[in-house]
Length: 120
Image (tube, rainbow, N blue to C red):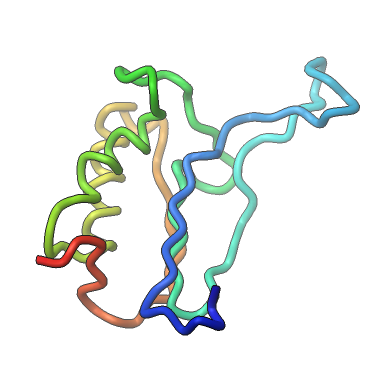
């Protein structure tokens, strides 16, 4: 992807749920919990539904999506707003709905200002 020299690379991941190793099953302490730490390549932003070592709840007032995606869909189409501002708004709404039990996390190496998903 980076070889195409895009203005920015944006990864948005709502995948921080508890999972089980296939050969071990769902018993005891065999589950692997949460997100592992990641680093963003140059001019990249990676946004996660929760912080490293944490998991998200599957509970949402909307059954189709998790809470992170619910608020991402609410804010992502706002014209002329920088992606960092959008992600801060998403994080605020998620934390408010979950009473801070879920805190979205992002890693960014974007140096430019006004990286807008929808032009204004």
